[in-house]
Image (tube, rainbow, N blue to C red):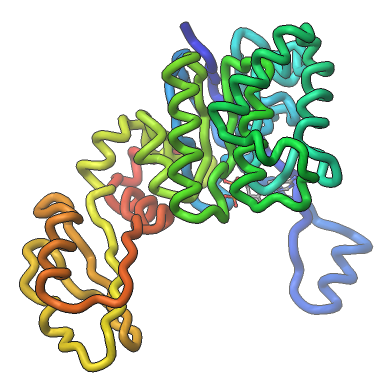
Length: 335
Ligand SMILES: Nc1ncnc2c1ncn2[C@@H]1O[C@H](COP(=O)(O)OP(=O)(O)OP(=O)(O)O)[C@@H](O)[C@H]1O
């Protein structure tokens, strides 16, 4: 079954042309010149029910504009889309009963009220029966382990605690499709991991389709099975994440802090790993996962040299996308 389908979906904005200098600004105010900006260019996309799709791209690529059209907030300039069988911008209300949305940068929970109040409100908006609501709430509170936070005003919760409540709230009405915009932004590694597990579990147990945007390579790697990359409003790549992992998500960075007086030469010689940056006592070791594993490198280094602190990072997604862009020939890119 198809969850989402678009054909030549496009959005053009009319924007004022910028003119240099004060005189230019004045002229622009009196006699503005307009130009068109193609934010989304003829996007063709089909997502099957139950898929977990990462929708990626650098800043300004057109992700939010696409999501706004798919959730019915914005009309397209041209093209078609059906989400769960509805034309989003024509049947926004009907669609809202069947989708969930989480925007990492915006809260849908009432800031001064405890989450339980927003949960109650959502259950009324979505017309859940009292019995169904209470069972569902109990299940989500258990799964997301948010019992201790349900009666605390949202403004007093940490970001991680709030995000768990946000995502649970978005699932209250059993949406068949979840739009997640940067769900792990600003969270620490442990909380990120937990949020990813929870979303994945909902996908497995309830078959919820996931459509996610993120700048975090870890979200893509651990949560999604398919990656769609857009660049300058057009689709640059649409591939299984497994393939992406083999081709480009194959490096990780280890940051090491060595104690005063340690000999950094000891960091040499780990197969597939090289020191690429030094900042005081902090060293960046780049690991080629095609040749070795993180665990292997860490074990070797820890056995050889005293280490004060260690952390492992994914390469920034922006870097990966630039790499992909360079790999693709220009004619393969929809422009
Ligand atoms: N309301 C608007 N009016 C004019 N231009 C807009 C408007 N909304 C978006 N744009 C432009 O359209 C392009 C795509 O923007 P969009 O917000 O969809 O990108 P994005 O991929 O979500 O970026 P980010 O990762 O920074 O959120 C950008 O160049 C942006 O400046």
